[in-house]
Length: 112
Image 1 (cartoon, rainbow, N blue to C red):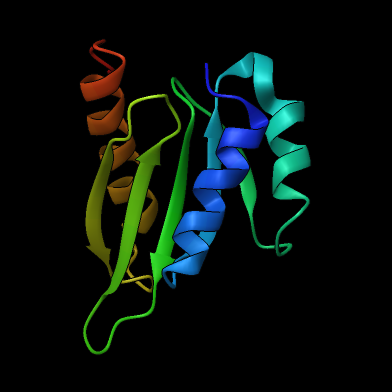
Image 2: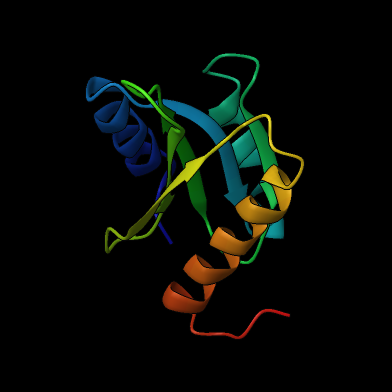
């Protein structure tokens, strides 16, 4: 399990490269810890319960859809990059699909 200090370091690295923290996902036992981390950032950062610890970042595009990256918050860095139209009706569904893919890759469990 990654420490809060390491999570803050990951976030700082992304921010230094132009990414914006959008969401945090965590296991049920770490909700309060992740809410404290989210509280250090813009009010738009939300914490969601999930099957892994991860962070969503986005970066404005030069043109086209917005780049979103889902980064596993684990000792071994692993991330998935997607491009989303934030005005799309299926945005939340697409976000969930990416989270499931990341969980399957890092946790090794099939998520229904």
